[in-house]
Length: 136
Image (cartoon, rainbow, N blue to C red; front, side, top):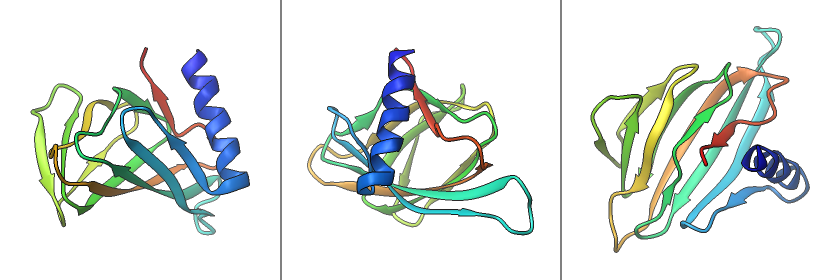
């Protein structure tokens, strides 16, 4: 509950500053695009840039229940595990999708010495303001 409130507060801070969150594990999340889809009433496309320092990671999480996500690695390498699938390392240029209701158990920089960045593009209900809920 508290983490959901914090995520909502971070989203509010984004609208004031452009940054969604900096968590203590080294992940910086910045909203870089937010636009309603004119041909699909009630849906929006939102893109977030996730930047991990060396060894950085995000806690296990789920996304908004309406979210379909396309993620692509821009720099470095990302370790990812969705649902009970295998933990996979994606390198710059690689991509994957997450579907509504998926559980993202692992999201981390695969390197302890180099930074990594990914772009996550969400197609989501326009009224979904909390894109990510972290587990306790």
